[in-house]
Length: 108
Image 1 (cartoon, rainbow, N blue to C red):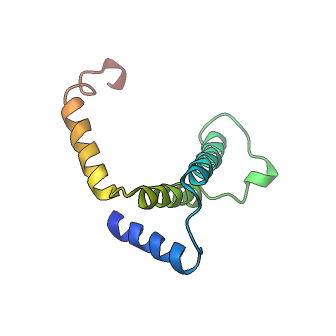
Image 2: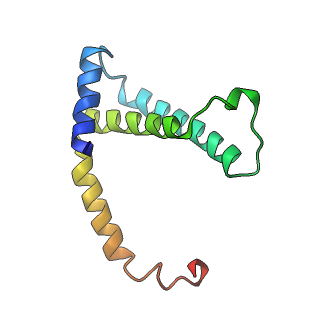
């Protein structure tokens, strides 16, 4: 699935099942909440925190998909073509960081 297809699929779901988009501000708050849930699982899986019983049924991929879902909603609501935005962002990073990381002693 392409990013464009994902944007269309989310939009179709919202319009046929979800009734309507939540407001942009509500979705921004939901995105923050979802990133927090992802961070919680990352901290327990790869960090120093131990799992609580309530965390054991959480799935890392599902939490990442929740973040992506809300980000796509925000892009749709604000008229952002994520494919174009991502391509421009990759170009920016490539030009800006062409030699930056290869010369970073911390990464060797």
